[in-house]
Image 1 (cartoon, rainbow, N blue to C red):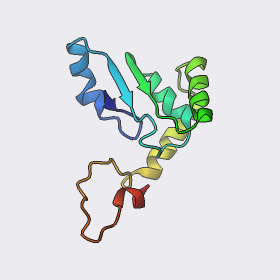
Image 2 (image 1 turned 135 degrees about the horizontal axis):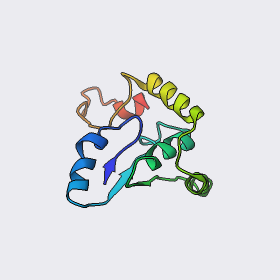
Image 3 (image 1 turned 180 degrees about the vertical axis):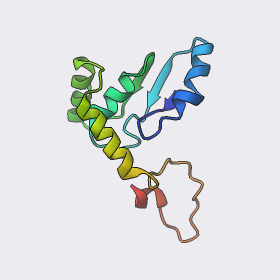
Amino acid sequence: MACYSFLEPDAVQKIFPLAKEKDIGILAMKPFSGGVIEEAGPALRFVLSTPNVVPIPGSETLEKARENWEIFTKGYSLTERDKERIEAIKKEFHQQFCRRCDYCQPCTEKINIQFALG
């Protein structure tokens, strides 16, 4: 199980080859990067278009779970619009996306830095 989204793609180079080498399946958690990516379609299709990877998206509501299921059942190919949205979102969060490493914690000023960046 690894974090994997278009904002956090490192697993495709660091983890997925090892899993394949050892014949281990891959579950991709946080395809919405912890809720940062609000558009489910491009985010899920990005993960679904990666061979041999099964996303396990979190859904805070039944409506979100249904939306995820609808995306899953309609196909895995990224559309041109998906690709445009992915690039726009990547540019928006370049240099400011919190990757939840917690190196900034504990904050001496008691600021919840992850929340402030989200």
